[in-house]
Length: 279
Figure 1 (cartoon, helix red, strand yellow):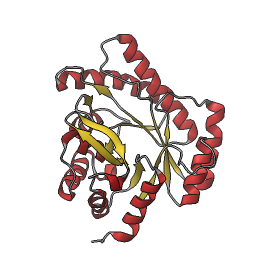
Figure 2 (cartoon, helix red, strand yellow):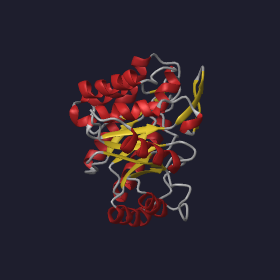
Figure 3 (cartoon, helix red, strand yellow):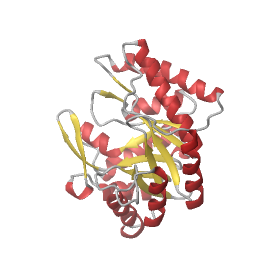
C-alpha cells in the first residue's frame, strides 16, 4: 500500500445518497483515498449488494475497510452471546470480503469485572475459533481489534499487540482519540511515537506499513469517552499525531470519525500533505 490514505468512517454527509456506492463515489470526488463501511448496527448488506460496492471501489481506486456491529462481546457470561458475537464478526468478514474490503475493525469485549488476564484468555480462546473458521473459508480479510474509548472495554494497545502476536490473521486498529480519552494522556508527539515504536517492536516494520488508524476529536470524562467531536472543537493534538505518522513513514489508512466526517478527513489529509515538515 503506497503512503497514507485518508477517508471517512461511513458515507460522507455530502454524498448524493446514503448508499455505500454513493459514499465511495463521493470519497473519490473529494480526492480522499479510503472509506470504512459501517455495519455497526448490524450487517444489512447481502451478497447481491456487495458486488456493486466492490466494482465501485475498484473503478475509483478507493480502499475499503468495514466496522463490525457494536453488539460483540467475546468475554460475555452467556454462551449464546459468545456464539452471537462470533457470528456477527464472521458475517461482517464474509460481506466485507465480497465488497473488496481489506480489514474488519471491531470492539472486542468488556472486562465485566474480570481481571484483565482472565478476560484476555477468554477473548483469545473465542477469537481463535472465529479466525480458524475464516481460515477454513479461505477468507483473507484482516481482523482488527480496536482500542476502545472507555476503561470498561477490553483492548489496551498492549492487549491488542499480544493478541496480534499470538493469533494469525489479526492486526491492530489504533484509535488514538479513544486511547487519549481513556487515559487522559497520550496526546503529544512523544506519546504518539511511543505507540508507533511499540507496533514496530512487537509486530515488525510490516505492521507500520499497513496500519489502520481511527482519528477524531473527542470529549471525555472520568469514565473515558463521552462523544466524538470535530477536531478543532477538541483538545486532540492531531497535528502532532500526523507529524509522528510522517516521521515514522507509517502507511495504511486513516479513518476520520469526527461528526463532520469529510471536513475533518480533508483537514487531516491537507495538513499531512502540505503543512508538515519532512525529515
